[in-house]
Each structure stands twice: as structure tokens, then as C-alpha cells.
Length: 111
Image 1 (cartoon, rainbow, N blue to C red):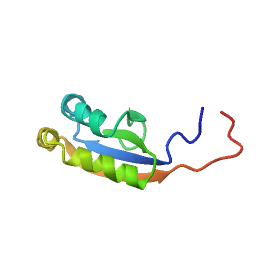
Image 2: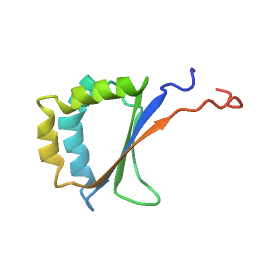
Image 3: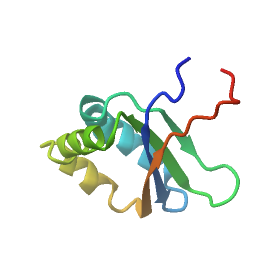
Image 4: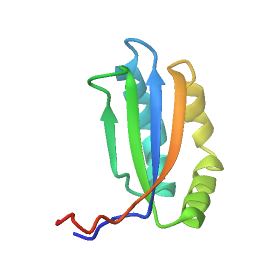
């Protein structure tokens, strides 16, 4: 396995209204995922919080560099069908965080 798999990771955390996670996941899967797969590519992973702050949906997307991130995000944001996801999810999301984190090589890590 090559490490790091991507030099830059978009680490997104959406806080979802209480008891609305199933509805949000349905909306995200139906309306956002087809566009995200087309514009951002394959995600690194999806998670929901289990301990600590609850009702959080975390998704990770990998990029080769900042230019790759900006190019693919522009494609996502200008996709003609993406507005439908925003409209359908607006009442479900109470907060959003987005971090760009950079991979760091750890010579002692043996994969």
C-alpha cells in the first residue's frame, strides 16, 4: 500500500438535526452521491459519530494537491443538479465544518 494515498484530504463534518440522520442519509445518497461520484471521484470514507458530539456525518475526499481540489470542487459546485441536493437537505443540516488536511509521512509506519 502506498502511503499517503492522497496528499490532501477534505475532512467534512455535517451536524444533522436530532433524529433526522436517516432522512439526511437518504437525501445525501439519492441526490448528492451521483454528482459527487461524477465530480469528486471515489470518497475515502463516510462515518457517523458514535461517541462525543452526536448527530454528525463525516465524509472524507482525497485530492492530489490544492489545484486538484479546486478543480473538482468547482465541477461539483457548478453541476446543474447540485442545487436540488441543497434544497432537499437545507432543513436537515444545522452546522458544517470543512478542513483541508495534509498527509504527513511517518517513517516508522510500516504498512
